[in-house]
Length: 518
Image 1 (spheres, rainbow, N blue to C red):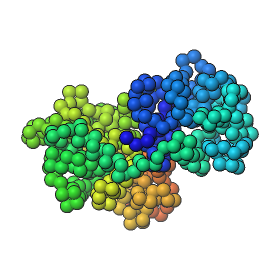
Image 2 (cartoon, rainbow, N blue to C red; image 1 turned 90 degrees about the vertical axis):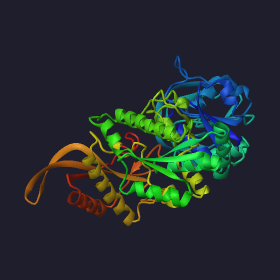
Image 3 (cartoon, helix red, strand yellow; image 1 turned 30 degrees about the vertical axis):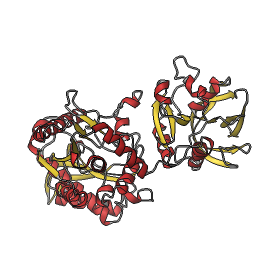
Image 4 (cartoon, rainbow, N blue to C red; image 1 turned 90 degrees about the horizontal axis):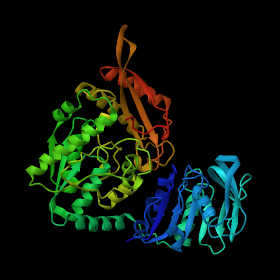
């Protein structure tokens, strides 16, 4: 088991970013709810603890508290925002409402040499309404701001640390170095969480789970299901049968691309099931996005159950569930989070499903999945594909799903992504560089607007273009695309796609929106 940092989640919107930043240091981190039982947390054999921020105030009745096992463990502890205030309260300090709240950028001044903070002034991101009025006995201030005399603190023995600001967000430029100092230098965690180690652990875990049984893989053609299938194939070889379902909600030419990639590059036999009519029949009249996901999830499973019977009833089903899917669907480790949407491979599964799930990517972020895919030798065309939701175009075709509307959306999407690719902007590998697009697609709206074409009145549907920049897909910003490119795309769509006479561009970030529209 790799060296592990356990992160206790007290409800901060940034908690997943803490986990991601620690893993960027090649140290494994696992996120647990703040009230996880001691046996569960200690079973991970952590090298240290990080306490996240949260929306509560430590002095309020019923506010989340610091588990006793954290301090009793004797391991290093880093509290961030609410986590810092928890340490303060637990160790005898005092936390009170702030006379002046701090939200947004601030500058901290390091007060003394210490193992956590580099010397000097640093730009940081604050987000708190309480302040520490008195440090616990035996603690010293490490940094201050004009509004916070105790912007960072540590115990005299160097075991406990607190930061009033958020080192995990990009608005704190030196945050990664602060986390590295805590994780690697103070906790002594070895940076051995690499794609190769992830593969080795996943292979061992898969073999232990499935033994000599046969396994069925659900292949969607997306990055996640492709990497999950390749991992399981590495683990069990010919015990795996891969099934690709053509739902009718794929992107243009996607079926052919997926079949070619799997058969030529992985040497894996792929069974393709044409289920277009079945999906469209079951989705007839369905407009609610949550119901769409549930219908699609159940239909997928029923199709795989039928394939399983044909293949001799393999008891295991592989799915490409990744960590953001679990988070947004309120999986078992995030039972305190509000559900945002059901993912068809997390929240839309029927309760009477006949499979045991194999989910080797369940706790990996997208960048880790891609790194594992490369290490497995998957071709770039698979590893660096544009992200695509499991339900496919169903959640980009708002309103009722029909074949004509899907074809309309497919054509518009191909024009948009094709123009981005021709302009050199559609390259996930370079998504952290200015102007590079992490995800881009078209959305078809169930609304009509009046237009004029060839001196004639039209009354047709509208297409929305969506393009975002992001590093982790937990947060995202809209891409500032060149106006001439948008004009060219809009002109082509209204001229080449039947039934569309208006094109708009989505300029909403995540949050408050999600990347997908449904």
